[in-house]
Image (cartoon, rainbow, N blue to C red; front, side):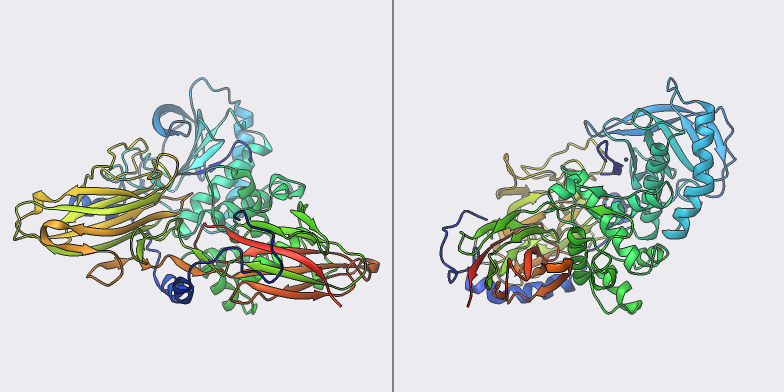
Length: 630
């Protein structure tokens, strides 16, 4: 879906056993032994970046231009009326809206929908702020938009009018010709809902700065993930406007178990706050705002982009360590601790504690998201205690097990993704054929699609095939043919058996392909495929062995990787001193750590807990307890 400014934002049940019990959740020994192998495979498999022009060209079999107009157009004059496609986020359909060009400034065409009360002086004030402050600020810290862009015009467009469901949005689809996307406006454009924020106000200016950063970010690094883009957009609004800080107990502070490295269709304000806090912290501690442009220029996806920037800049830390420092900074926020390592220069967050533990009490049994945080308070009576932590040693990449055997295919996940797996089949000996396979999917409905494709000409062109469970519905225009979008089950993702008629390809050779394509702004767990067969030619593949599939982004594995844990112990000592200790959890997910004088010299402590598994959206189960120690 497009990058939007939201209206809100501008375990498993376990027996309580003793401390020597097994970890809360574990995969079987076979999967656990091979989890590091799967992790290596995950790290070495590229998350292939989508190219909508190339995708449509493959499906149509014809070359497609990447721009809508060659050469500069005649400058537009104030008073002209143009028609725009505007996405209604309430029903995921596009509506036609007319708008009049009210103002032309050096870098922007300012359009207003008829009937909307936008005063000329208010528009002039916001236009001046954009030209004098926002435009140079975003260019300095983040880079440039595509210019002269898809329309050959160096000016961008700002549409002000009815934009249902959101305060504003930027869609990269507008950066493509209509031969690629039917609802493209074929210009660099931001849509602003004047019912949410009005020109001439600080809120309007901040929203425009947020969306303009999205436009720039797409051009600088289209492979970047939503959380980096949204955090950068919030930071852009802060840098280009009045001092803006996250303070007090926000929605994110009330529930900090929010995965930084992902997004969701709900609870988006917590994601915005989390991403903003992290990007602000990163900028303040690792090069200042001027470093952001260098970070974004590291082509690819996080966390690798952060790791490369940190290594190239000589900081001697990686993304995981920075994340854990930030996790503690959100709790401590004290510039006196370790030279300000655990502080926010411009924000004052307040984190809510998950619970409180005393020695001898039943264990706290919980789950935490990857790259999120639970904060557990530890209190005592002055004696020595031992912290006992038991976490799952492994985690699934996606939320289902193979339908047979131990292995399956996973599409991978990411924003702006296009992955596929392809195999040649000889159907020369049969007059009819059927492709059958087990399918599980959890994708962004109406925006991200899984396809079955076939090619007769060796891959020069491809036909999208319609299976029994495929849908032709395409309200947003994102689909290139019948596909699978949303969730495979009625109440959530579930395994289904699909079949596709291959009879039109009988009598010769055919290339078959499974392909998964996501847009910008949000993605879910992805697609799983297992037990592929074409019974007419005796082909069966349960994923256990290599059978000729050529993968570009898909991963064949047992769907299990190691579950790393990030634990930091924050000790609040008499006299106001605060110390922070990183705790090393073993590969079995266990930790026993002595804590002397809890309730005495150490008045209290807080254990910060996070999962650190890459790519997956699966939560990590754990339990923690305190026992008295000699």
